[in-house]
Length: 227
Image (cartoon, rainbow, N blue to C red; front, side, top):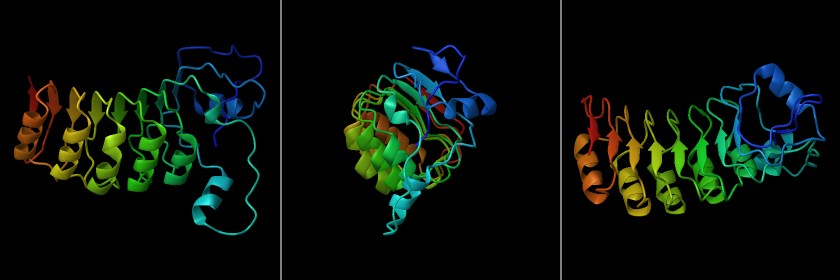
């Protein structure tokens, strides 16, 4: 879907974090011969120009017309990737995330501020990235309890989870996480109007090893519980 080639003449990173600006990203997307396959950490946060390739949207639409041919390399070439930040890449859709986020060894992922992410996309990401330890999904207002009921069982290694400002979530999501994510240590459900303090207390009783629950403005309270 998204090219990960590096611009000609630039040093090709083998490890570490890449934070391209819009111009640098455009250059990288134009190079098809030198994809940094050993890249371990990649940040594309706030790259609003990132959008799905036409063939992915075509697949999602279910039309019978010939599918456009893919062009250029894909994030799928980055087999060594451990950390990926797609925060506020606002044009990403369920279809594009399902196609590209196939990283069984990925440990850290941010999909915060993705307005098009729904339960369908969440479940697909859970299947493609089952080894996540850190996951950020703040301000994903279309993700609901239904999605977490299906996704939680895939993320048994989760340790840090940010669900702040996910307006559709309720205590049902906490129940699903509490049952499946037994290694969780830090949870942020700040500004989730459907989750109250009673539900948080039940969650902490279920997972006593959770050392910090961020719960600002949950149930009208401004509170961080640290054990």
